[in-house]
Length: 161
Length: 161
Image 1 (cartoon, each protein chain N blue to C red):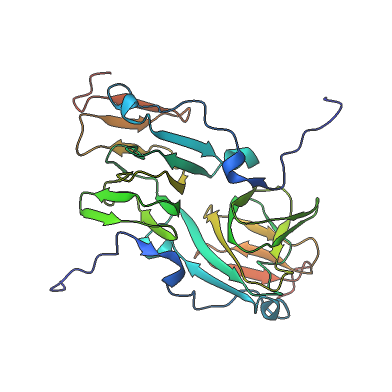
Image 2: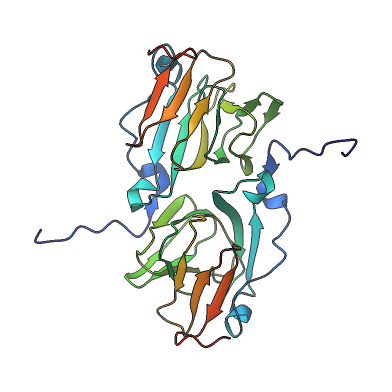
């Protein structure tokens, strides 16, 4: 047993927390497209297991993800700073701080794109329902969530990347 | 079939969304203690099912909840405006905008209290794991989540309120 038990903090300043080590889990050429994106995993800091919360920063030209939807997991975003464009397969919407959007499993495909000259900062929430699939209507990519919690990516015909 | 299908909006201004109809689900005398609290259910607006997100406002003197923990559900809060005090059974911490806190199932009992003269605004996230119990270390109250998704409250000895 350790002599001193290290307890997680009661609260933290979100923007001062460590970045996620991996920039993206996408295979190339999609990995490089996420170069303008930084994620700070906030829920994990406190030991949350049922959902994740990230504070994510998009540099000018950056994007949240490929256009995608989940088959089982819900997602939610709340804009903290900046003016991203919400791109979906139902159209586009300009967002600003204080606006939010939710993406139920099986709903519209979506991503945030930063077409401005300033950083965008937003909170993103997603649950961890097992057996989830990621669908990418605009790209030759398919994702499945493994039993170990990691994503596996293939071409749409099943060939590995 | 309806002639026109009403689709949810792609995005909304969080502070302009409708208030939750019920002020609190607590029985008295706890119901009245929540008089300074207003919740705007954001995730529900978009049809999210796996977790809830609320934008919650605490007037001066208001509080988020009784001191409580969940046995199965995780919770997370992010402070948007104002300076609430996070009260836990491990101590108190002063919060300010941009700070966040997470409360894993079975972790510290917690609530936010607004001891200032200004409103507090925060986002709260909680999942919907079934079979959850609410534990209230400072009050004669016990809660269990029914199969219909509603909370049942009793005294700690099981007597109904």
